[in-house]
Image 1 (cartoon, helix red, strand yellow):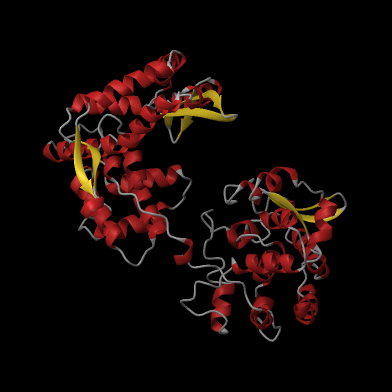
Image 2: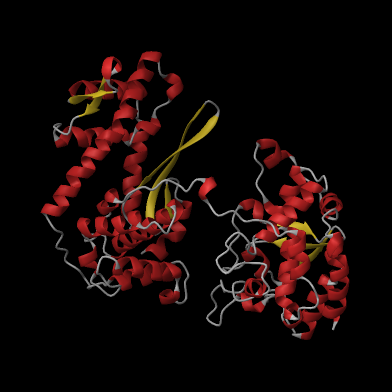
Length: 500
């Protein structure tokens, strides 16, 4: 049904298909000159059902009355029971008002229903008094949602789900289903699969356990506790592990929507992002480290020219690992008479991080003089390759998946052996070349808008994002300032070695 409906939903005014679930989406009147959109899941993967639900929702939005809505939430606030607790202490304490769990379930559900409509309110139409009512409603809504989560959690524990399955699924089955949907050729070798497997072991469950045994609030809570107590991973990684659980629940719902609901998502914890100060930064290589790394006395790059040129591209364009090693022969182009490398997402293996990462970068003169373009052309002719073939074929495994170990078992292993990088040092890696390129451009006096074009950064403000457009010849002038003069004696020797 989903595949048949792809064409229909893409032309439907209000329906969008996302992760095999239909969503209602509609543009709302502008507010303070800014565009607003209303987006809500229709909780179905059936196109015809989604279309009918969308019609009803569109009619409700069309008939929505802001003044009537404010009056309704004002009445609701008057009917809601509040508890009071002392906050502070001594002579300065004050009574804080909280929504009481003694409120009846029907009133709380009505509150949630109204909360789902608050995005439709046009704030610029509200009087100061109405804004106070609206802000109070917003403030207490999170408390109402927390109370409902507790109630739903107790109900789930008291009434275990006994689904009528069309098939008995294991956790492995659901996980493989979602990984294959994401294009993973060998799910059992994927990192997500192993992370889930290890976390399940911590609560004495196996990856081949029945999914119904997993689909219980107490099991989900135990699994989340394991993630919470794991001091070896930071907040960002914990968020990732919880996201894997969320995906597992969601994809089970796609397979058996009438059996596995998504209400268990309400009990998943939210972890704070890891502060920048606690993250492992990518340090640039020092001049001494680069001199040692590219010293021709080592024959590593001579025996592995792919690794050499991959490092050179990163060093001179500041590109990320995936963007470098998935370059195709057709990505080495001439534009406006200038030799360039285009970074474009035109293959499943290419995963560019942001829109700004998709760009055309003129090849710096120092890299051109080393014979990079000639190397690519000769290799293409010698190996009888086409524009769609990869310059570095080892970026792809035999099974067609991305080779994430291309660098780990390559240049990083080499620089660890010669003492540049410690075996547990995460501060120096392939991404460090990106830092070297950025620092060199800044030290050469290249302005930020040009650095953004070369490195592939998004501008920090509207001017840098939208109005600093440069031609390829202009960028070429700036990128040629990126020079590693102290490495030139080594580069001269490598130019001769690579010719052979």
